Figure 1 (cartoon, rainbow, N blue to C red):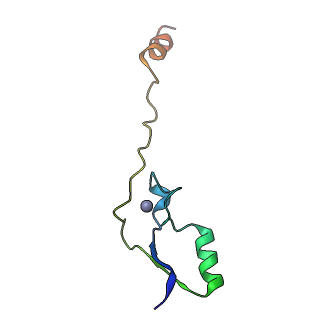
Figure 2: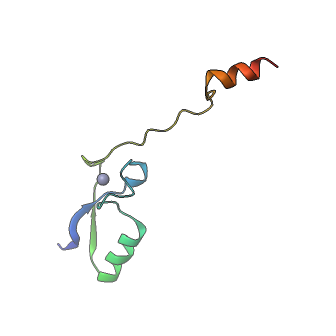
Length: 74
Ligand SMILES: [Zn+2]
């Protein structure tokens, strides 16, 4: 079976640190191109080796001690 570009694409790129630059990212335009070419897309069923989870910033915490002191000194 022929697959588009003959590589396996990654549908998890939106959660991946490198997702934007990853050549395997299964972005919408890839799906469009494959459809144009009449080819199937091969996609990972699990996160690939290159997957790097985005380190989400911790929210809901004071930015620094200084700010916290100012707020509590009201
Ligand atoms: Zn990747």
